Amino acid sequence: MTGFAHAMHDRAARRAWRHEFRHLFKRRNGGGFGRFVGWLLLLPFRLVFWLVGTIIGFVGRLIGVILGLVFLVVGVLVSLTIVGAIVGVPMALFGLVLMFKSIF
Image 1 (tube, rainbow, N blue to C red):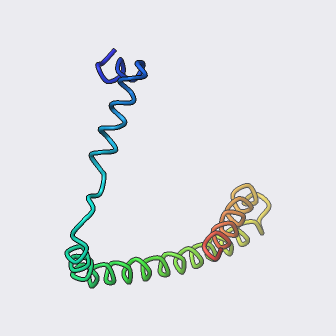
Image 2 (tube, rainbow, N blue to C red):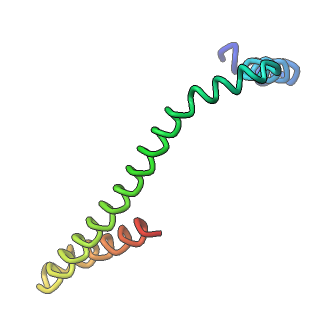
């Protein structure tokens, strides 16, 4: 057993490790104006990344709806032949689920 795994079995060692881990990521208080200036300087970058993420999200939904419609149509067309129904019905259902997932 490694030292970390062995320490996790001991309650006191686990508590000490958890305290050190929390202290590592603890925010320091103070510097209110400096924090505001840092936030203000990073605001344009945050807005650009938010805008790009929103556009990618909408484009992803649109592509999902289009692909779902294509799968639905191809699945129905393949299902028109009796032999192709084995592949066509699941393909049409997959397209329908993909469309609903993209919309909602």
